[in-house]
Amino acid sequence: MTKKEQLSELYERYMNDFKDKEIVLGDGNVNTDLVLVGEAPGKDEVRLSKPFVGAAGKNLAQFIDILKIKREEIFITNVIKYRLSKVNPNTGKVINRPATREEIIAARDYLLQELLIIDPLYIVTLGNVPLKAVTGDYDISIGTVHGQVSDLYIGNKTYKLFPLYHPASIIYNRSLKEVYIDDIRKLSLLIRNEVQ
Image 1 (spheres, rainbow, N blue to C red):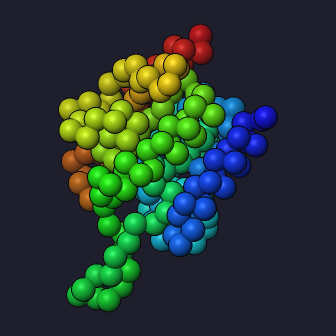
Image 2: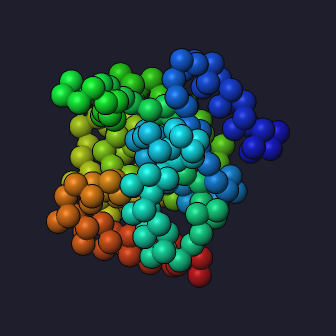
């Protein structure tokens, strides 16, 4: 079975298990060396059925520019593949909300299977939720491990894990922008050295 066929089967099971949700599946090159993992899609992602196309997607474009790659060359997915939302009591509008530990645990096996199918060299987590999901360590914090490469074991395979702050975090905390950019430059050097 091809990678695309395996993903189709996995996604079919996911959509069955979460059929009442606004689902956005992973997108990109299934034969890539680099997979980006975010938390969950937002309203723009749901509307366009594509991960990282909203405000965070603009910062992701900067990430891709620094790495000197095209979006089509990588695979982008989320831990939780449906929008996490709630109604803002002050405005009555539907807004995004953070994932619960239970939601992360419920989605983790699907994510690990997805990563095993794609089988990249590098797994780049964007924020705390993906970091916790891929490692299974719910006490780990992006603030202590961002920008550092480590081995990640999934099944009988070893990947290079490179945690980054979530692109949206620099929208809300401008002081992280320089750290985020420096970390992406570190990743770029790692990838270039791997290719040579």
